[in-house]
Structure formats: C-alpha cells, structure tokens
Length: 464
Ligand SMILES: Nc1nc2c(ncn2[C@@H]2O[C@H](COP(=O)(O)OP(=O)(O)OP(=O)(O)O)[C@@H](O)[C@H]2O)c(=O)[nH]1
Ligand SMILES: [Mg+2]
Image (cartoon, rainbow, N blue to C red):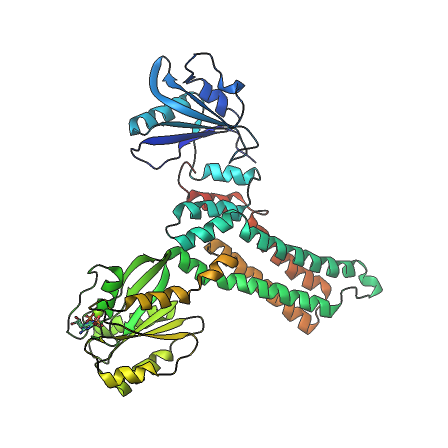
C-alpha cells in the first residue's frame, strides 16, 4: 500500500552552503509549490508548465519574500520517485531552508521520513530493492573502488545476476513439477543428469556471489591489512610511514605496542584499513599476551598480511619467523614479507631473503620504514593483491542483508544437490528450489514486508 501524501525535505547536506535544494514529491507537489511561487511577471502557474523545465521566481509566504529561487519540475512517472517532483534551489542559509520547509508543510506537505524518496522509487517500480539500497552506498562511497561497486549495483548489475539465477531455478522447477503433475503415471520427465548439471551451475553461481562478500565488504569499509611480526622489528614505524602521521608510539623497547592500532588510508583509489599489532614474542606478561592473541586474530581477519622482519637478525631466525606465520595464512590471503631496516641490515640476511622461495600468494619487499625507503613497491604489491580488475568485471556483494540471504539460498541449493544424490522425490526437490527462489526475491524486493523495508530505509538520510 502506497502512502499518497506529498512529502518534502531538504536534500542537500545540513548546515549553511551556497545553495540548498528542497525536494517535494507526491501528487500535490506542484500545487503545493504553486501556492508560494511567484514568477517575475506574477501570473505564471507551475501547474501549467511543461515537465523537465526550470523556473526562476520568488518563494513567498503570504506577501513576504523568503528568497529568490529556481524551481525544477518533473512529472510522474518520469522522475526519481515516479511521482510529481518539485525541486526548489534556494540560497543556502539555514534560516531560508527551514522557512521554506515550514511554508511547504503549511501548504499541505509533510516532512519526509529517512529514505522515503528512494523507498517510493522502489514501491513505484523505478528500481528494485537492491538498486535502492545501492543509492545509499553511492552517497556514502568514500573511495574509487567502493564507488565503482555501488554505481554498478545501482545501475542494476547485481539485479541482472540474480535475475539470471532465478531464470535457471524456474527452469528447474518447471522440469520437476511437470513430472509431479503426471506422478500417477510414474514417468520421469526431468532427466536427472541434466537436473544435476543445472543444480551444480546454480550452486557455483550462488557460492561465488556469497564468497564475494568478503571482498565487497572490505572494499566498502577498507581492505583489512594486518601488520604483524616480532617485537621491535618496526611495525609501528611502518604504520606511521604508511599513514603519513605519528599515530603509533615507536621506541626501541621491545613490546611497545600492546593493543591493536587501526586507521584507514586511501591509496590509489582504494581504502586500506591498517592494523598495527602487538609484537609476537614469548612473554609472561599477562597484558602483553592478551595483545599477542589479538595480533593473531587480526591476522586471521586480514585480506593482506604484512609480516615485518628485521634484517639485522641472522637469516635462520628470520626464516623460522616467516615459516611460523606461513602456517597461519589461509587461502585467499596475501602474505607480503616486509624485510625492514635495510639501511642497517645484515648483508647475509638480505641476500638469502632475496632468493627465498615464494608461493603465488606471497611477496617480499625490502624497505627502511624509518627512512620511508621503498614504500612505493610495498604499496604496489598491496594494490595489486586485491586485483581491482575483479571489481570491474564481476558482481561483488557488498550488502550484509544480501549476504545473509545468499547464505540461506546456498544452503537450500546444497540440499537439492544432496537430494539428487540420495534420489529423493521430485516434490521435495521442488520445495527446496522454491525456497531458494523465495530468498532471491527478497534481495530484489519482489517479496518484502514493511518491517524489512522500514529497516532498510531508516538507515538512509532524510531527503534521499
Ligand atoms: N635503522 C632503522 N631503524 C628502524 C627502522 N624502522 C624502525 N626502526 C627502529 O626500530 C625500533 C622499533 O620500532 P617500532 O616501530 O616501535 O617497532 P615495533 O615492531 O612496533 O615494536 P613493538 O611495538 O615493540 O612490537 C625503533 O627504534 C625504530 O626507530 C628502519 O627502517 N631502520
Ligand atoms: Mg609497535
């Protein structure tokens, strides 16, 4: 059920600015604006103007001039919300903005709820739910990669992928359910091998989408990079160099950092979230041990692990540190060995590190964090390890709600695969497939309830 009232809100950011935009949407939008709009020749009516036009005039309250404004007109269904929209651009004084809003409410509009413009766009079929959600992400995007993902999703990239999945699932149910209609005759229309192939294809797609969330989430909030290593190897010095500020305390005392220090930097259009951790060593200090446990947990959560080693140490010692961390690296993580202090390092250690065997997901760079020497190469490896090309080509899930739904859908499809293996009857198969379809509809919003919608849109700002 669609609320028919005409809503209004300030759509530009709160506070003073050169100009501000106040937006009205609903069937009465133009009539409400007309009550306070006065054109230079005094007799122009907005209601009689063509859509997609701009009109200069005064915004008045009874006879008082509030401001000189430019009004933009859009008519249903060709507008963002699918309803009549009036956008009033005024001077950006907070007093003027508030005054115009008050007058519009006095004329019969009501204040919009957070995200209500976008919610109406969704309810009027201008976009599906995943696209509507992307509108918030586009507004919030703070780096090039997150922006790219959000724009792609807003333009329907993700919806297309879900649509293709639904097609395949519907094809599957059609095959199985035809068989059910003729169940008394004991025929098998659906070729089980074909069904299996199809199910496997769907499973792969769902798995890929589900797994993409880790990267998607990382891009949105900053790729997690853990800086780990022994005490005193220069982890905090490296963090400060990467952030270009003295964020962490640096000293030659072992065990200086005892808790995780975190900050985000934008590098070449990608946000990286660095975690400087407590140096790993054997110690009986209880607090320090708690810090070391946190270092390991940050290591597990990171997409990129920077293992800092001190080239002043003999090679066998350094090598054993590297091997110890290698055991903790899981698939999908990149390990960059940062051989630090090359300004004063042992020649032997450095030479042997140069020729150390590296796996595909491993890199080594030689730096002097204190002198900021060779950090470019390190940054280069980090940027390349997240492979920005994937971001451009593939659909990547960035939204936690979508991820939760995809997890359920994936479980349902695994049950179908299982069912095909154990030879369960078509009606059970079709039940799981229907469940899977149901979940996908929740992503695009074909199936939604007011509680879910309310929850999604309440996180928007007012005016969007
Ligand atoms: N010569 C030289 N010294 C460095 C370099 N990087 C760091 N240091 C010194 O190494 C010492 C330890 O540096 P930190 O950054 O505090 O080391 P850490 O790994 O954070 O140590 P903990 O917090 O105790 O685990 C400091 O005295 C730094 O100035 C470098 O590239 N060259
Ligand atoms: Mg430190």
